[in-house]
Length: 377
Ligand code: ADP
Image 1 (cartoon, helix red, strand yellow):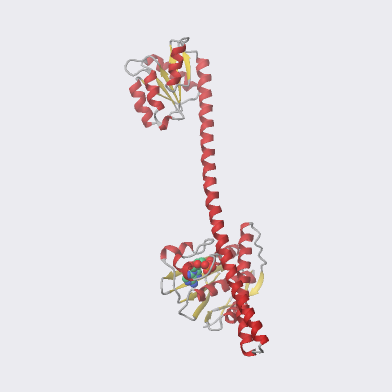
Image 2 (cartoon, helix red, strand yellow):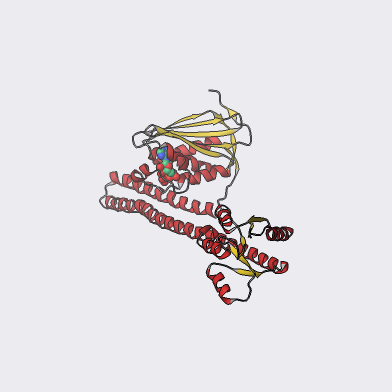
């Protein structure tokens, strides 16, 4: 919008008409004081100021405007009867003026200047936006870089821990073999394998994250028996944690269409977490249900440390770890993020219900393509 400032109503009228006929929106003020009040309230692209006005003259208005931050992109055209006095021109520029049009106003010249200022204003706005976007981008990249460094240091630590343990168990195993102590040999071998599995899972998770990021996580969907997959997952867990009891409540049986290996990965992740975050309990419950909307829902329940309410919405986010558990338990915060990606790629959803010190229920729900058989209870 343009603000026209002139003490003569007839000048205001004719200039307003001229500009409006050329599709500019125009506001008017009959004195320097009124103009200032308007500029304080409203953003103008351009102010066309009559230099000679009673009270506050055009230069005083321009000088005051130049001190306002909200008017920093605003241009000023002085309308002046005087045209050749160089002192006059210097004074104009010193007070923040941008251009002059001499009276009587040549409409073509004025329009040309107004259009130039509008273009300048638009370019400045565009530039400011680009600058802001660049600043945001720099900030974002700095934070990302910092996160990456943090992640690299945690990841290296997490990878080193099982590797160091494995090395120690293999050395003990070597000694047992040398001393023909066959009783302890198996024990050390088992411990070394457990550490190897941990390492294997960590590396697989890291690779999965990079596949998700690059959109290359492939699903190999086919029909499979859900119960067979569930039993496989339970077997894997029982082998890794023979001390844990998994109580299975499964009321459905039949074929599901999906990637069985990836869905098994989700189940194993839920079970592993349930065990890891339940240091005082050795029982895990798994419940499978079929909803009338043909969604298969699997719930894994533990009686572990639970999760504070404010963290619940974050646990499926990449690299998120609940502060309290992060200091007590090892991890990288990748597992649940991968689970949620796998389930969403099956058209399903994940969720969690939890109470600190009581335990958690992690669930996922996937649509099934054909009717499963309900098992009579
Ligand atoms: P990680 O276990 O490696 O940290 P996850 O992505 O599997 O990564 O889990 C993210 C966070 O969610 C964990 O750090 C933990 O704080 C919380 N969490 C996950 N499962 C449980 C659970 N069963 N009980 C309590 N907290 C859990």
